Image (cartoon, rainbow, N blue to C red; front, side):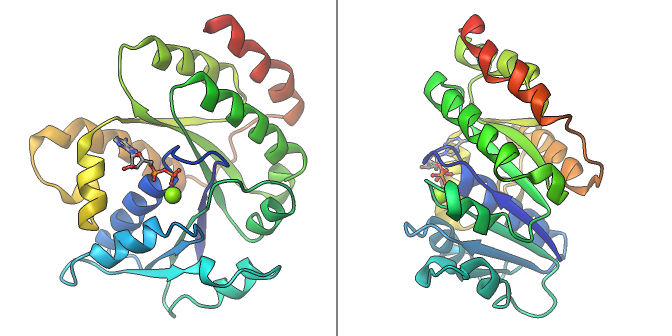
Length: 238
Ligand SMILES: Nc1ncnc2c1ncn2[C@@H]1O[C@H](COP(=O)(O)OP(=O)(O)O)[C@@H](O)[C@H]1O
Ligand SMILES: [Mg+2]
């Protein structure tokens, strides 16, 4: 079973949007897919409850109903047999001991980030924790960044891209700011389940994410490189 954790301690960065769109994508590929919602707000669970029964199924586990120290381990046992892809939608505020618990048994971590200096600074701090305390590299977990709610040709987006290019972590793709994501969330679908030319470019952007997830290569460099070049240079570009 492959496990993807969508993680960023900051609320509203796009964790649920990425988790639900990925879940619908894998389900549409005929992959046995489980979506684990750890957020008490239950947005992924709500998304799943809106999903029409004729669509490829996503098994959603409302994982925050019971939280104890062994929470991630116990919930891993709750997915149906035949589950090949597990997507974990983390709540906001996952740091410290909670973070260590979430890192258990995951294969990949996606960090969504919005083009705003507040979000970028919070992410830089979090990445530092993830690399140093989380020891993701030693655990063989691959980590990638997804820019979300992007408005092309804005200074905020340019600043984010410039900052990400200084990081020694892979930047995977950019997801546009679009009401289609809001509408898809309400309907329990993913954007690639919406047909029509208007989302062609968006689907291409998502494709980069699917490819990155499929690629088993580890492609980030050393933690110390990140610490030397990463968050320190953001100020220069804003
Ligand atoms: N790419 C996007 N375009 C437009 N709205 C978005 C996009 N991504 C997220 N949103 C909206 O922003 C809000 C926060 O996103 P969400 O995925 O719930 O973040 P998180 O799970 O990190 O709190 C939601 O209302 C969601 O519909
Ligand atoms: Mg959420």
